Length: 291
Image (tube, rainbow, N blue to C red; front, side):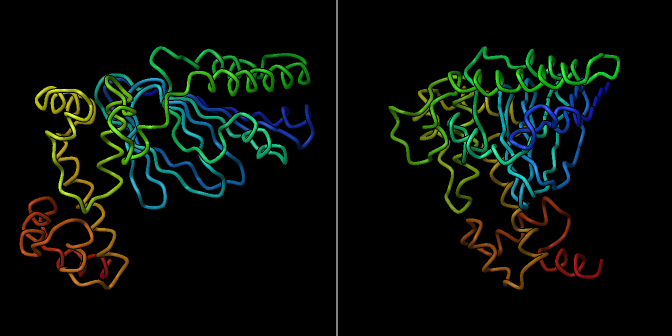
């Protein structure tokens, strides 16, 4: 089952002139269904709230995974590809906003320069998105009243996000163990980020589990349940996707590509690549160039 609701919020632009304007809001709900959606490049920010589920977001050809209760601040003038996995239920909201006051507003809220803001467990912002969504319904009278209500709810949304932000330590792969998250979504987010941040490093699952104060078996089970792959399989998947990008868009030799993604043995890399794609790296490159 898929439910996608999208509304324009053009009248909200008149409330505070060009200082802050809300231009659109959307809600997506999925049940046991995979779904891909592209957010086209536009001159406005987007605030995306993943209430539940697992989302893979591709930005500048780089894929990152986010778990439920993640708040993403997506910069303008970029295209984003969203991929929702089919396990369980997924729900997400996103709202577009712009205006010359945006930079000052985000700086004041401490959100500027952030991409993923992992919410603390139990912090639910959906009621504020739902309120803005209701204000966008055509049946609502008094456009100015709706505009002011929408902007007021949006300001509450920013204000509500700040005190619930989890420690940023998990976004730093070099953070000392005492600062790293211990359990739940934040621990998983740290592990995923650590794998994504450097594909050249060999993955020591037992060491990563110890740093998160988890047993290796529990860490692997938790990771696979949430991401859909074991940590090693997830790293391999990212390496293969990166290799595909380099094969399509560069003239690097296979051995150079192998080294860039952490394979010291080019023959082992070629064997792994063929196992996952059905083609050798050179066959994949030739096919990409021919298409």
